[in-house]
Length: 162
Image (tube, rainbow, N blue to C red):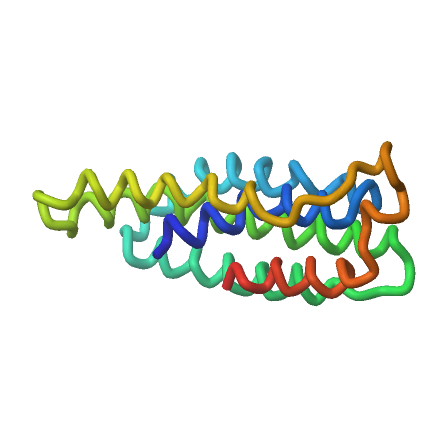
């Protein structure tokens, strides 16, 4: 479940970005920067506190930031972008800890006969979310590229990561 959630939280932003068109362009890479820093930090924490505590901390951070990402409401677009970038960075930071610890837990506690199939299935989940919600490009049609319902849909998609 950890791999599935991580893949969802990392890769759905491309769907959300397409839904929003060019409105919120800055949020796409922020989580990846947080993920890189989270890998380094939680690798150190995992050694100091143990796998279970590090996993619980990273999972809690991921849940809180996924919810807060979807609750980024404000009248100005700039404030929404800043809030999303803040919570997406910390979401990525939590994923940076959760992702490698989930891999260790999955490989350690899974059945030897089905271990390879489980790990392959979990990594395959990353590509599923890149297929849905096709829209016209901004260049082709600026009005249709961002549907009016997208303002609610992207918030729901962000919070489904919980």
